[in-house]
Image 1 (cartoon, rainbow, N blue to C red):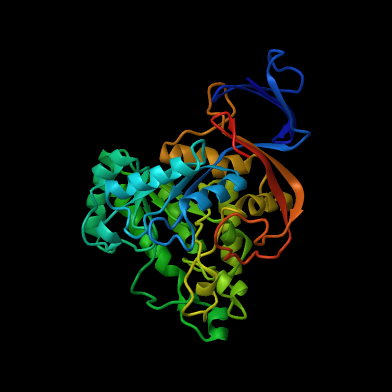
Image 2: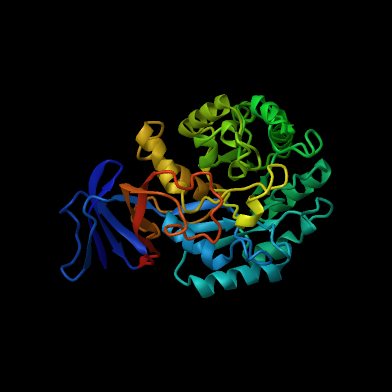
Length: 419
């Protein structure tokens, strides 16, 4: 038995009692019914948070291990407070067969037998080509937690219908990257004042909103759920609000970088700020912050997308999209708490409870019997992202060298300490 003594949870001092791999009680200090022989960990006022679930990450293995591999990605996750990581299917080969899924899970078990846990996301179509449905039953049986066509929107609405119907039969949810592939082919960043200033092709926000509207209307017609990935635009929020008001089973996610940055981060042709979907305008960032606070956007995800330094060290139009997020997500989220945008209860909702509910994964609400996945966090520790303090293989983040507050000091998964 383990007692975490004198931690802080949502602003109040608590003791946490753990029995094996389950939560036993969380009480005010000194009221824990722990036996005398219980192991005691003195938290010293550190913040107690449940293990986070990242529902959207790219761990690159198999095929692109020079960017990241499952071992390094899960190490970054452990230090970032993540107990569970859902990884996308854009590997080589694509995760569209049970063999690839099993390989991923075996690699995770070999490198991190006590967690973080890996939950692969199945490819919705073979080869992510959007032409033929992948063998979803086989992928579910192998261990996939959800399905997505990742960064390649399924343009064929009839095919998408069949995918959503089949997924529902398997008790899986479809995650869609919403983008009109023809509206802004060859885009580099958001279409707006900054793209005009830099002289590069932009992607209009309406392309994201149009695709989200299609998905939501289809979900309403079929009476099935759909999950909208990495929302970047205020217009898309309007569409999601419309769907939720009609009772559609639509959920949505966004990422810390859309809450912290806008299109001005690409001034000077900064490739580290090039992501897909692109950073939008200041009004979009403000709207997303409000939507995350009020629950219109259900969850936060990292969209962890590592790239090697030489790939990002290219022209803005040639450099790949994506930033790393597992190392920095917690600090960035807590930055919103420090600003007063979120309160201390919001990170647990956005990174644990709602992802667990949407994707039907175990999650810790600190109730008796909940999984003993939790970590202790020092919100005041100052650090700067850099190669000596980050654990991902790749360091492509626009927050490199910028002072951030907050570091994980200890992490337990299933009652076992992993950090």
